[in-house]
Image (cartoon, rainbow, N blue to C red; front, side):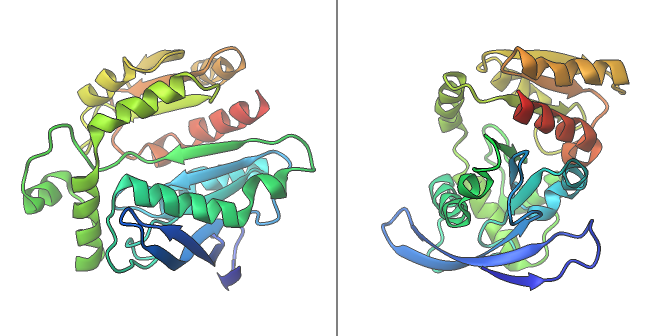
Length: 270
């Protein structure tokens, strides 16, 4: 593991790179220098949060949540997928879910997340996933998609990565993952807004019908302290919660950073 960016302030991301090896969908073995964020590389007695960004995206997607996790003493690892300006792309990259999952598993295995945290006390790992820039029944041209969704990319290489990722996003297969999640004891929280310019709220409401054990909360604009405590308390006796705020936009990792961080803390405790 090589640290290549020093932290000049506690709020700055601590970036590292590590060589990982994984197999592509076509059976080719790839050796790649994975760039990732790790706020507490020695591990945390409280637990670890792993962030998986959307498309486009990076570890920076979770910076507001990570700031709060820092204050709580909870470790944060931000995975950077290949092709999105931090971890480089590789020849023949598919940009599909299978390869991204294999890449992520290879990185987390190298980091030995559970092993580093084990020994202090029984700890857990929480995953954070940003919403993909995909819509049900997507059939528009690449240019139209980028314009309508107001996707911001740094250059042509990242634009290609975004387009290919969206084209490979198989929403129909997401159902089987939801059904598997229903059978697990995994705590879950889904937050979304009514003014999301990327993912239509109707799609998320439709998907929520497939989840089991989630208590739904709906707000017009603000969430009071009392209401926030009720949401956080759900994880004591329930699988989780879904939280909809009509006035919110797509950027829940910023708007609801406090709520997400507190929910993570509650999940790790319960």
